[in-house]
Length: 131
Image (cartoon, rainbow, N blue to C red; front, side, top):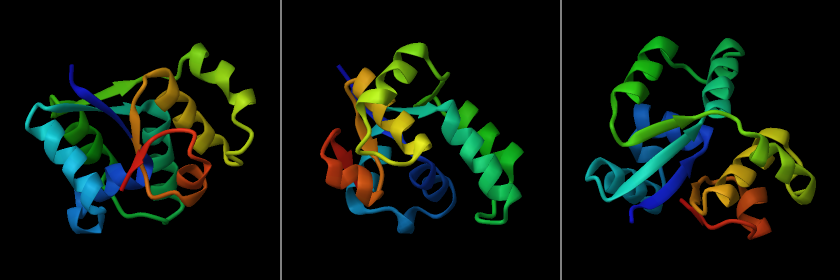
């Protein structure tokens, strides 16, 4: 079976726009997916976060082009927010931020590793992380 990764917002933006900003293990995860040895799941909330970050001027990205790049790459799979994920949120109170908690819950539900540099998530040790 393929290794499964969940991409957080920063990892996805930096992979698509500026790979050198990724940590070595994050770069390796994306390279494995490109080589069909892994798959990268993108929770739809990550796309929503990108749109809001662009609107607030926190990141610069051409959103339609970014979405096109994601949809045209066979190694990315965009997934909807699921009830099973939401039902786990109450058990993850160590993660203070709602979006991060959703990503952790999705990572648990899919038995995946999370591509993130977020210290709160990494330090919680709730899920395996790569960066």
